[in-house]
Length: 143
Length: 385
Image (cartoon, rainbow over all chains, first blue to last red; front, side):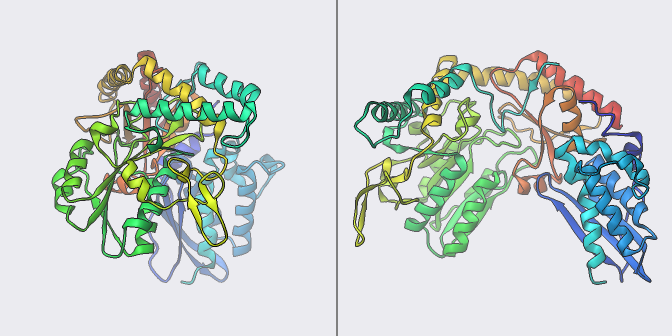
């Protein structure tokens, strides 16, 4: 199977130099994500200011897909309201699970479209969505 | 693109004789065992017990009725944990396992300890991936009731000194269970010579179908252990006041088993006997040495598990790519390996990695396939480094 659709250059680049890497000092909200299938772990921190994601960061061990997805997740939700962040996740999740009718024309997804190839690799869906699940949980966590 | 199948530690491919035996069974031999007086029931019963005798011969057990059919090695270990545990384990007793166990040889003992108040002790593993035998000796005491260790590690390939482990355990009066899921397909196992008390194998890792495996137990233990599951076939006499159990092996085989899988399993055993397990071990060892020689040259690649005695398992990590990415990239080139924690998370923690990439060989693999593996690993470097 052609791997070009999975390992796009943008993904490889984020894997080498992940953005927003590191912990956020308290008071911040955090949540852990764990993939029992492969042992991958991610922790997401964020702060909410006036219902918007003010700061967001992550640390984790994982494959290129999970690390790049975490990195781009932080870029995608920063500055968004809680509802907007959850909507991006919903669209992203629909895309990587192959349930999104037309990800190419979805303005909500933006740069995240580079992950559309994941839908053809069912074993990698969890890698791509791990940090997103942690982000969603962190939104609801207590600082 | 030809398939290079190097995930044999997960499951082996099946020879045509095994596939044919399955088809033949369901086409012409299918009946329930130990039931009817009709031809098919008698035929199925006869074929079912032929496999038991083949397994006895293959593992050199004393009695065929010491070979209990299970779905898999996991079920065998759980059977012993439940049944041996009920009869012989109580609060304060100690059970010994090792850091390199598969989760299936950890969790059943944890559950047993929770139920009984027994304590689970763990043999440490050295940097090379060998059992720390001094550590093992220091754990043994008159409190030790059972030692359950892996014969060949699925994640590292280490061949453990099981005869010595059994001898030392017996000196303190403890029983020994060996997890032979990775040894039975690849090395000769002589149960009487090993003198272990229990042994499990995994039929589908030794050319057989899924659903048919063996739990071996010494007659003297099995006779004194209570049934694991109750149901049809395992009874002698049932009343609402009291039931009595069938003799071995039926006592531990409640309900209709995977008859077709058991019947076909004999053909896998006979296939292994014809090729010769010793020649299989030699072939795999040659492949492993050839592979190790080549991957050692790859910059940024580290082997995990470098024991002196190893079966055909090549576990490694790369500094440029996560095992998952290695696995997906190799798959795109037709090379099937396992990427993950190999159901051995404590062992992964011991080596400070979340997971490894693992190539595992079997009798049908070739040097050309090792070349394909090495070439594919180089491709991973060119993508990620």
